[in-house]
Amino acid sequence: MALSRVPHPRPPAEQRDSARWEDPVRRWYERELGWAVAPGAGPGSAVRLVTGVRFDVLRLPAEAGFATLRHLGPHAPVALHGTTMGLFVAAGSAEELPGLLDWLEWGGVPLDLTAIGPGGLIDAPTPPGLVGSRGAAVWLRPPEPGREVEAGLPSLTSLSARAPRTAARARDGSGTDPRSGSAAGSDLGRLVDAAATQCHRVRLRRASDQPLAFS
Image (cartoon, rainbow, N blue to C red; front, side, top):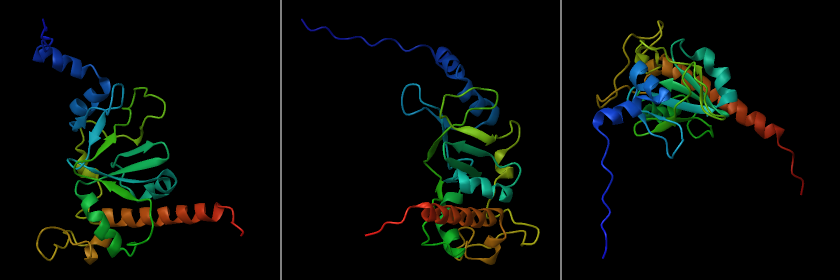
């Protein structure tokens, strides 16, 4: 006689919520910062941050990233994961990056510069005051609880004092046109140009360090 397996009853909602908040990493991001998070890819894996909601992330080699930091505002978070640095920028920046690189005349140049936007996930850096596992992502410049992160993020519409106060609109009226002159004066425009320059220098330096092949 075949016996049917009765599933274990699910714990009450109160217990599930309590277990959720027992994770200090998740609690810090969701309660202290109000950021969207997702579970790790497997048991014991790190909590991940959802990009494209409140911020996007520019990823580049750490060597290039350190040389770029002086072009980043003081309140923009910066993360480090191994040899890769993540610069937090305004949501929507990932979609603007290809056109902005073309406008800055970096289009077609091999660069280890990418952006993670809507639908993306990154490993959550260990919050300040906690000890993460070996090799985990860490904060170089952590976000500040109580401060809205969006206000300090580079964007095409946050122009410098020398540029117009409002960004030019795209020809179809849908948003900022990265080909307009105002894009170069924006926080994001200056940051991307500096990051691309440093990424290019790193690639050239690494290429020059390669031993010559003789036939």
